[in-house]
Image 1 (cartoon, rainbow, N blue to C red):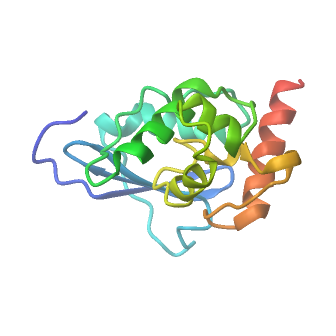
Image 2 (image 1 turned 120 degrees about the horizontal axis):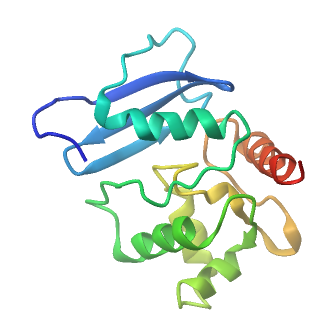
Length: 168
């Protein structure tokens, strides 16, 4: 993903919805911070060349453009095998604007009865938006939970934005 030894930890940049942050290691993206996770007084940083494609995608997303993050290299060291399965299934098989239930995601993972474990994995997702946990809903279409900044209101805003983009 990048040259060893660059030493970049956190990149903070501005989107249409506010400041967001990316934390990298030599193995990939460690975490993504949604608008609201980064305070307005956190200084913006320059964007190194290795991060520019991802930054451009995130900016495009918040400008209501259809974006695919499935090619982003994630640093999954320390992530359980089951959580890796959930995250990879969600980010490679659930497209922009699609929604599914925790049960449906469990089925996609080949673990139909593990819907509660899917919910637990998503609650710990260090890459909200990149691993689009906002697209997973409770039974009957309820919003369920969202551990990102802004909670359910942020999840609803992201879903509404994606729906509006697709209906144009």
